[in-house]
Image (cartoon, rainbow, N blue to C red; front, top):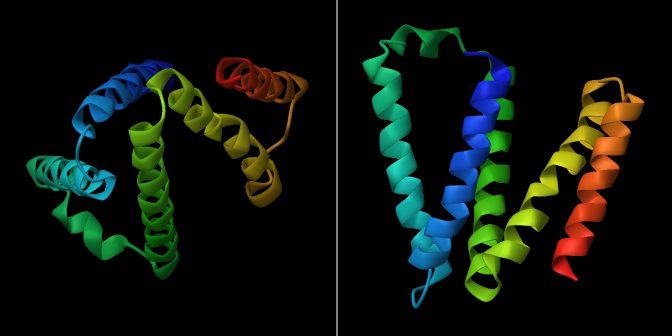
Length: 138
């Protein structure tokens, strides 16, 4: 499989995540819903890690790896807190597009912080994502 096939599968499961989460968060605290989801993801992640036999990889992590993976985890946690609260209060058809605006934001951040080149196609795509999000939420 190629990278775009994995990305497409990610998009499909992200869409299912929004629908399932909206149903799961009804009539309960959004933080409880997020905590349950996090436990499931933790079990799956560590289970896959041990099943594939990658235990020796832990010793190869550098301080930079640890630092940025912790930052990524913190950003994910904050994203999920706000995502579950938004799902509890709003419609999936409005929350999901705003959440996916992270694509446009990631493009901008990749240019600013990672030195990636912003092509006209990327800029146009990001602008269309932002425009589409605005259309969907109004």
